[in-house]
Image 1 (cartoon, rainbow, N blue to C red):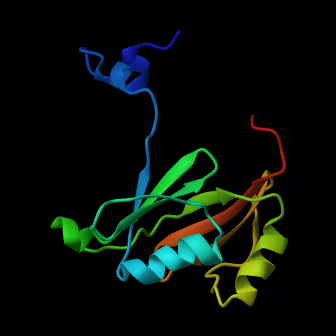
Image 2 (image 1 turned 30 degrees about the vertical axis):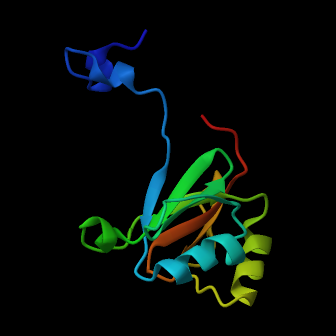
Image 3 (image 1 turned 120 degrees about the horizontal axis):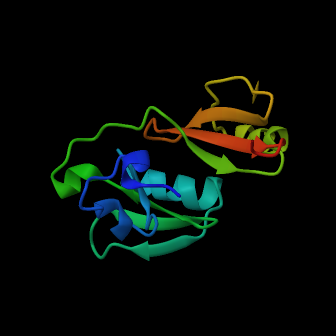
Length: 138
């Protein structure tokens, strides 16, 4: 049995109220360009647009990604430097398809011994990762 001491939760057990992740946010320097990239280049299905605000949700499997211009929400723009890993069945094939559209990869394809991955940047400089685990988790 996992206790609050094991998970780092406070004595009040506040983490027990968290039941999942609703979305992750990716900052966009140019919202329209980023929305085109996630919807057209990556082929993610578009979801909810945040009214008149420069923000759009996209669906990546079970994960909702909210692409938004943080300056419209009173925040500073800073790209993510650690990647969000997108599952693909074949990293080499997905990389080839993206490179054909002009996507620039910032790493060679990595074989960690359990997975293949290749890191690239979106138009705003956010790090993204094509990922495929070929070995079962430990």
